[in-house]
Amino acid sequence: MTGAYGMIHVQSDIGRKQGDACDSITGLGVPRWLSRVCTTVEEGGVFPVSDVTVETSKPPIDIAAGIPDPTQLAYRQIRQAISQVLGDKARAFSALSYGDPLGERSLREWVAGFRNVDVDSVIITNGAMEAIFLSAIATLDPGDTVIVEHRSFPQAARIFSRLGMRLRSVPLTPQGVDIEVLNRLLESQRVDGNRIKAIYTIPNFQNPTGISASADTKRKLLELAEHHGIAVIADDPYHDLWFSQPPAEFPGEYRGTSGSPLLEIGSFSKWLGPGLRVGWLIADSAAVRKIAGYRLGVDGGPATLTQYALSQVLQGSWGNQWLAAERRFYAEKAKALLETLQCRLGEEIDVLPPQGGYFLWARLPEWFNSSAASVRRALAIQGINPVWGNVFTPPSEIDVGQPDDDARHCMRLSFAHVSKNRLEQVADRLRDALDEVRPSH
Image (tube, rainbow, N blue to C red; front, side, top):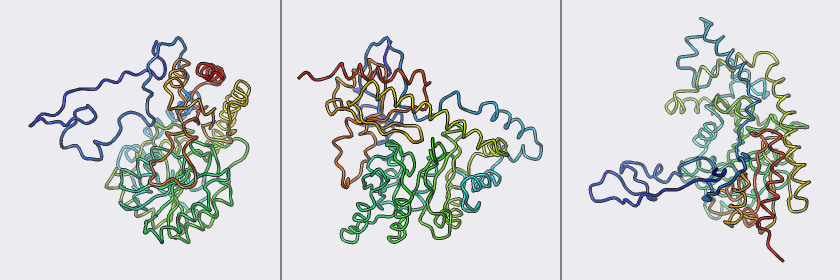
């Protein structure tokens, strides 16, 4: 059996001859007409696949995937909602036709009530990823600089880079973005002429570290943004999956209000399913109308049938009741993974206890790191696939205030997708991988 990391890479040695229709790019033929943007795109998933292939008898345990537990999705309710919508003559045609580029009104009203903002400040998007893209288009021009957190969501960094933006990074503290370092960076643009236009942050249950910004940090971040005339793109897909208490909100006077620098991104993906591809963006209503006008020429508007179905499902108190059950469920899974890791690995692992979201951030001994082929092989033999910390280091021009040395021996472990019983096996497997490569003294 091939392990979770098993993959054979085959490269062609056929280069381009004069007159050929394809160029050889990293050994793979692509058409000459393919744009520079597309030729430089890395194929495959969000995270790189290990180059290690092993034979192992252990079935893989997926601790990389940031997707829901398959037992927790509302299959029956969504199926019934679609049937009800299509069976209703008053809604059936509209649900299968083009819709409002702002999104279906009843779903926008639900989001506005759920997040306590005005409905005119809400636009529905095809998932949070599109909301990131639209936020980037709304706030940045090619050549502008966006600040990202020193550990951040790789797909967001790719969006900014592909749109021609430059990236710089600031470190995180236990309270969120390091405001002092950010302020120095913003002040420095007056000297070096660097045009910083936005900061991208994951304010709650941050991916990958799990850190949530404090109320004080959120206020200072927006005050700083307002002072310097930059936007704050707050990507917040895990906001509602808190365990013991909800995260601090951004100050109300900045949330969807006129002239505010804040753009808040939310999503149904983490608690109702990413396949729905429904998210939202909350911002200044005038900006929202401009974004809707832009997106009309990009995707024609959000998918209407899924919006109608969600509006049907979310009627009454069902959504809040479903979320409450999911919070308890994921909190139990997070606890199971945390306790078994602490019990089996002791002082060899430093873990930030998850307060919500999907992920646990861990630091291992320096000798157990991603650059060592023996470590990658040991993990593959154990059939576990943590995501190494260096994957979350953005390709920024300057990393401010924080060295990247520890990224290679940090890892993100997802407790979301696999069952609790299987999560409880992860610590033993990680322990065995450590023992396999432990240096002798």
